[in-house]
Image (cartoon, rainbow, N blue to C red):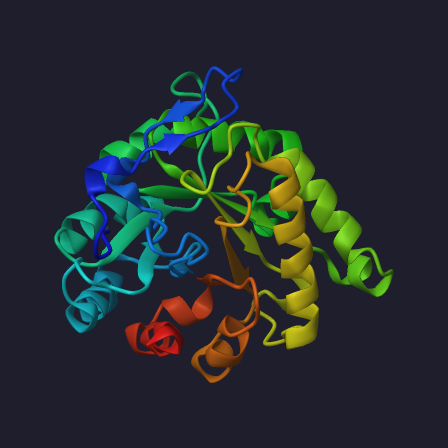
Length: 291
């Protein structure tokens, strides 16, 4: 996925934390949009669709509609990604070859191989054609008991395979009502983001758990407050200058009718979309917020 004036060969994941043995991390296909050389504060948005446990082979027809509508890879002002179930990754990657749509995965194991029945390694996802992996989604944290430490290990494994980690954070309704949102998010960021994180190898996604799939969304002021807090913490945690360049996505009942308003919030650099990504027309309506 390229943007005007950027040499794809120059897209590498490097950390200025030279003490870390993983400080040189190559990002497959340069999935993260590079900062424009004339304006390093500019962040190219990413709209990513998470199909979750939905989609059989006929669902690739929706992906075809999407790629046909978006056209080729060069010149796009918004990065677009679909994260289908594991069974469709290879076919989806083949179908999207030469288009502006990248393919990601929804989870992975932290190990490269081994006796882990039912799990999948990030190297396998890379081999299938994925460019990124979602880690720490609230449904994984809740349904599978994933801790911040586990998410951290998975993110490092994603980098080991040369992919980009999309790290998810978000508070539950109980935590929100108790006024704990910012504390919860801060703890998740501290525990889930590895030391070697940079704007080139990580994307953050804020998804309030109570808004996912419910049709409910926080106010734009609420979103602005959380995203500003995430940005401030990233600037403190990451090497100099990196925190201001990391893409922070909003997720939680994003749909065509509210996308423009949500995407206009400061420090919102795109969306992680659930159900509305299953239909090309709906997903295109969200992408249109950036056109």
